[in-house]
Length: 278
Length: 166
Ligand SMILES: Cc1cc2nc3c(=O)[nH]c(=O)nc-3n(C[C@H](O)[C@H](O)[C@H](O)COP(=O)(O)OP(=O)(O)OC[C@H]3O[C@@H](n4cnc5c(N)ncnc54)[C@H](O)[C@@H]3O)c2cc1C
Image (cartoon, rainbow over the protein chains, first blue to last red):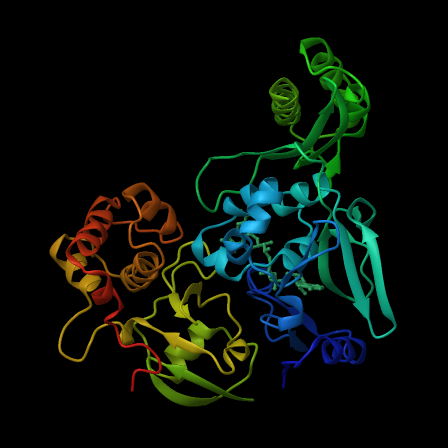
């Protein structure tokens, strides 16, 4: 008999998680139900979907937003605060799956699965998000970059749940860009994604975060390219230096050589265009 | 477990294991075989139902998640006397051929027109992009939905029997 637990609140979810580490926490099910299709009944499930503490978007001091782990893509898209403060995140969510996936899929599920092509991930990385996790022993807050450990691997212990994502306020006037390269249709898996956020001060790039999806085993920041741009004016010259730096730091995921080259080429074009748009 | 749910306006209690796919429970336990299985992986939208008013792939929902929810399947879309306007236009415009995608298309279109009554044709295509059809080439489906949109005063789009109407 496979048990299905529907905790009433976060505290009892965490207790259930501690008591039954072999049970699957389930949010929208859009990753898990596909992955487990032919695997028979699970030991048990802990249902998180709709839990009010995990389904809200709330204000953080200073203008950031705290987005519950079980907030769906559809809810993100309906939220005008997200659209106006973090357009890079709205844009990423708009291109996830189709209506049915958006109605059910959650940010927490996207982050927990941590596929290298997960669409919200580069946006959250470029926004400098913090992941909030909890267990019966308490809460931890981890900068998203450190939370990503490897291929589909995140810094989440067996008794923990992702509770929320905190997105800090961005610099006023920051440019936020999202690009998904794929067969630009619904349900398409990204070939490459870029989320980038930057702002200028006195004509020079004073802050920049570039995150890329599908160029490595996990979503990554293009740190060398960022470093090449910081303090520079956005122009052809600095863009060229940045994309050279990029070639030295990313290792596209495909082992088919030409495919890796293609991906690098696309990533370079996207970064160049972003720099020239500043 | 016992799951209390309102299906097509009727309160029911389902006794089953919570991890089972909603799709299987509808078809095997409740005899609601209007919901079709296509790919079983959320790609095709054939098994779309409206869960608390939103379109979901019933192949991806563990039925335990329905506790306290309200559900509309294709069986609940028509009124007792007449078809829903979208069902009617799908028939008249040739938007249904083999019929496997049709229940999902009809329900998703109902949701789309209620959510965005003024949606452009392009936008409607986007909202229905998760419903794959291998017969019609989509043109007839989109024409049917646009016809429903044009002929329907906003309220009649909501004609379908909704949970709580009793
Ligand atoms: C047809 C289709 C199209 C898709 N298209 C896209 C796309 O374009 N872009 C994209 O990025 N993804 C896409 N996906 C993948 C999927 O929809 C997303 O990754 C989604 O965000 C997963 O969220 P969920 O709530 O459904 O996760 P679930 O399936 O419920 O959970 C996924 C995993 O995360 C764990 N988990 C969930 N929530 C938590 C939590 N709060 N704490 C700890 N662990 C948790 C679960 O145990 C499970 O292992 C698609 C999937 C399908 C089926």
